[in-house]
Amino acid sequence: MGAEIHVHRHDPIDQIDPTVYGHFAEHLGRCIYGGIWVGDDDRVPTEDGIRMDTVDLLQDLDMPVLRWPGGCFADDYHWEDGVGPREERPTRRNMFWTQGRQDIPEEPNTFGTNEFVRLCEMLDTEPYLAVNVGNGSPSEAADWAEYCNYDGDTELANRREEHGVAAPHDVTYWGVGNENWGCGGRLSPEEYAEQYRRYATYLRSFNGMMSDAEMELISVGHISEDWNRRFLDALAECSEWVESPYELMEHMSVHRYYEAGGDTEFDDEEYYRLLARSRLVAQDIDDAVETLSVFAPDHDISIVVDEWGVWHPEAKNTNGLEQANTVRDAISAAGVFDDFHARADVVSMANIAQTVNVLQCLVQTDEDSAWPTPTYQVFDLYRDHMGATSLETVVDAETETVEDEPVDVPLVSASASEQDGEVFVTLSNRALDGSEAVEIHTDLDDASVVESAVLFDDQEVSEHSTDDTADTFEADDIGVENHGDGTVVVDAPASSVVSVTLE
Image (cartoon, rainbow, N blue to C red; front, top):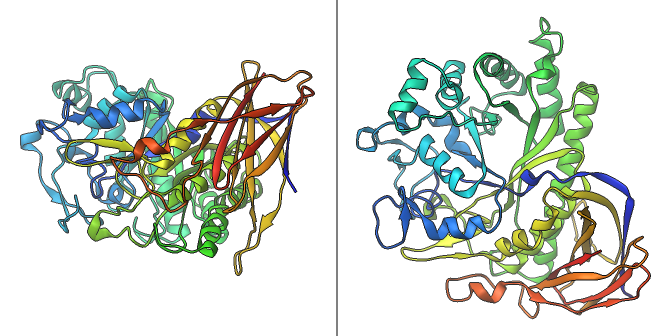
C-alpha cells in the first residue's frame, strides 16, 4: 500500500519564520575554539580570527539566527570578560564544559561579543544573546544591552567604539537566562518568575528609551507543563502592579534532546525509538501553547525551541560532546521540521544544538578542513520553506509502534509550503526496508514539476560523515510521475528524504 500526501493550498497555517532554521553555538568542546575561531592559526584561511571554511559552508544555508554564548555556559558568563584587547582579557573558569577534546574547564575569552557579532555579519544572520540569570544581575544584563545597542554618549557606548565598533549591533533577540530550572541556578518556577520580572523590567526600560533595535525577550520554559504553569502564575502574582505582566515577554522557550542506542551502533527498534522520541518536540510545543492560552490568552507569545536535536551517549563532557552524525539523525531532523511547519502559527524560532562539532552539528572540522554532516543536507534541502506560507498537509501512511513510547512513528512524514506561486513539498520515507510510492495531491489544476531531489538513496541509516565521505550525502535528482491533475507520484527510497517543487 502506498502513502498519500494531501496538500491543502486554500488552508494556509501561517508564514514559516525563517528563524525556525536557526542555530546554536556554545563555548563547549570544539564548537567555538577550533570550529569557528582559530585566531592566528594559519592552517586554514581566516578573517578576523574566524575560520572561513566553516563560514563558507554556513553561508550556503542562509542562516537566519545564531544563539550564543550558551547554553549552560551563559549562566556563568560575564560579558565584560570578552570585550576589549584580547591580550588583556582574563582566562576564567568554564564551570559546565571543557574546551577542545581535553578535560580543561577554562575559558580564554578570546571570542567575545564583538567577535560573535562579526561572525553574524559574515553569515548575514541575526544574533541572539542569552544573558546571565544564574549568577549575573539585571544591571549586568542592561549594561550588555547598552554596550550592544546604544548609539549615544555613555561610557559603555563609547567603550564599544574604543573597541573598534562604532555603530551599535542592534541585537533583537535576548534570552533571559537558560535552563534556570537546571544548570542556570536550579530555581523553582516561582523563583525564576521573580528573577525574570527583574531582568525583563530593566531590559524593557532600556529598549523603550535607548535601543534603536526592537528588542524581543525570550523567557525560559520547560517541557514540564507544571513548571510552565507555576512560572506563568507566579509571574502574574509578583507583577500585580503591572497592568499586563505577560507583556514582559515575546517568546517562551522549550528544549528537547532525544536518543536511542548509540550514535552508529543501534538496532532497528532503536532506530524507530529515536524517531518516536523526536516527535515529542511537537508535543512540547503543543503543551506550552496550551498553557499560554490559559494564562495569557490575550497576548501573542510564541514558542522558541532554542535547543533541540539528538544527544547520543557517546557525546560526553570529556570529549566536548562530539558524536558521529548519521543518516538516522538527519531523518529525525526532517521530521522535526515537518512538525515545526505544521505549527508555523505558534513557533517563531528554533535553534538546533549545535552548529559546529558538538552534538547534532551541521559542520565538523579538523585542524585543516571542514565538512557538512547529513543534517546539514536536510537544512539545505528544506531551505525553500524559509519565509514561505505553511499549508495544511495531511499524510495517510502506515505507522510503526514502538513499545513504551507515547507516540507512534508515521513511516512517511511530510510538510508543504507555498511561495511565489510554487508549492514546495518535503517528505521522508522512514521505513528501513523498501521504497514507498508516495502520491502527492494538490489542488493545482495543471501542476508541473519544477525540481525534485532525494537525500540518502542507497545509504545505510548508520552511515556518518567524514571529510572523505561528506560529498556522498549530497542530494541527487529523483524522478517524479506527473498525472496532470494536480497529483504527482514519487518513489521514495527506504530511509530517504525527498523534495518536490510544483507550480
